[in-house]
Image (cartoon, rainbow, N blue to C red; front, side, top):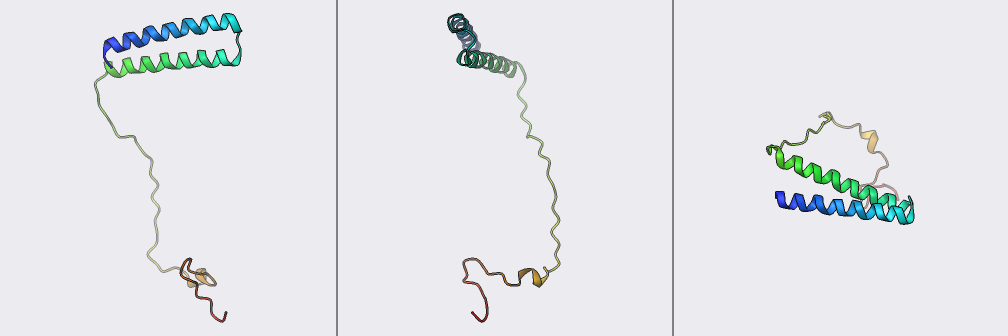
Length: 97
């Protein structure tokens, strides 16, 4: 974002803040006005973050992800685990039916 865009964004956020203040004077501190005030505050925070991004050198680092290693044994499964089980989609293998 260019400095002109940031200046314009800050100006518009200031106007929004002024409008929300006028709405608060007219309607009081109702939920809708509170939400608008929170939205304006969030936009101001986000604009500040953009300024911070522009002022710091760009170094992208992959996010650190904690990984869990699951060890799967190479030994054969116990055949009794599959007793009376059907192979889904293959019609099963029940004997004597």
